[in-house]
Image 1 (cartoon, rainbow, N blue to C red):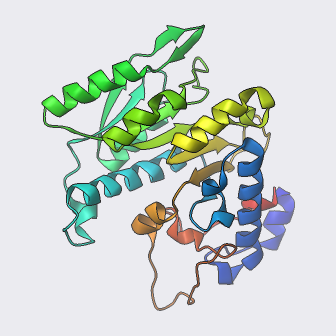
Image 2 (cartoon, rainbow, N blue to C red):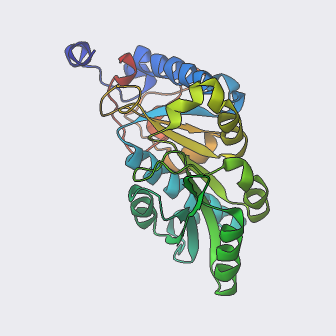
Length: 274
């Protein structure tokens, strides 16, 4: 597939530059979402959410944390001008994660200009997992110090111990605290395709704002194949949308989304062909 991708030399700037590159990516991301047991909100066909291929899980998480920051700034200052959310001081915003989280999580938060509150995971049933009571205690402590909870990153297969956080246990606290919930399933996410993990997939599908899974591990797709899904594509477009007179006019539909408006890069490879 890499030989074909290189030979085609697709210039994936917009849908109009290579319709097949965009449309096949839409189809592949919906295939994967359905295989993993995600509900309709994460599918392009829903017209609301959808998936996009990224270079790595770290890049996907960095994109997500920037979007989580902007969403929280709009929530804090709903009457502010649209551009102000990008420049507002975010040093009091806090992202929560367990101490089993891959270092790409804290790195993404640094890129986004937010604080990280690392919470010790507990060994439960042979698994290092984050507990809701510990998260609530951390949030209460931060609020007392004048900080603002922004996001929660859960793990489904942490790198060092394959720790699994039970997303279902955080549904209430996430809604009450208005947290962006990102699930990093870079390692073990493909397990959701198995019947014995379908309940975990359903919980993630119900609770998560965004999810990432690596294609370079269990799927054996090699690097440059990290899958990212969001429940609401507008959360990405609000941050990354940009254009100019030299770009072709675009109509953002189910099979022709402008992926340049979903993450940082403008140009994209024909990765879906894999």
